[in-house]
Length: 251
Image (cartoon, rainbow, N blue to C red; front, side):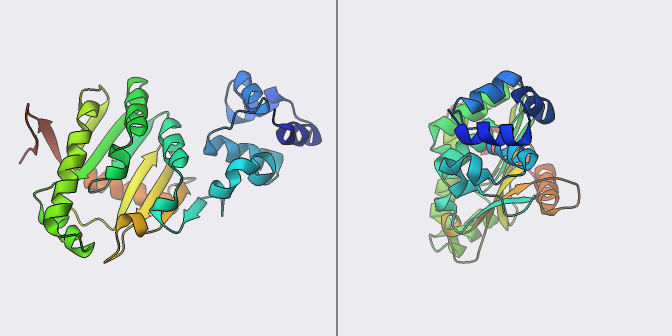
């Protein structure tokens, strides 16, 4: 039972049906929140804004990792490895229209069977899924391995491993994957209008670099810049096919 949420609703003189109407969700969904279920981040922020309170006042158990900094910057993590796994999982599970992944290997996601299963489920539910992984034979992937001080061969191997782990997604209708050969300044993980952006820094492994959680509110903010960047890479990337033995890019 979420007594904090109940008291905030009473203070605002609102009922569950009022919140449901404002957020365009089923009233039963709001009832589940009142009974203790924790909403997805975008719904938590919307409820907090509606009630004019801090998210921490309504859901103190999760506010520590998702307290908004501004309307567009929802959270900032000093290192990618500090982003709780539940944030990644909720991020993709919350998508209702689009999921986009742009990275070189993204092994930390590919090795999470729950996330891979979630993405497949969202695709089957009608969500458009686009995945951009690095071409393991490209000079850009090799250069990134050198930049991270792990060597070009290891980075290429990590990318090939990620491609192998993505094989189950390739059989799901609604999922499209491509290989890119671009210099990535950021890895982008999109779920509708929410983005987790992992900044790349020279000589620093991606897991050690910062992650910014953005919410796209308009077409001119920071999130829109990254969404545009994703589209540019997608347009220039090459589709790939899976053979019975290997995954290879179409040259």
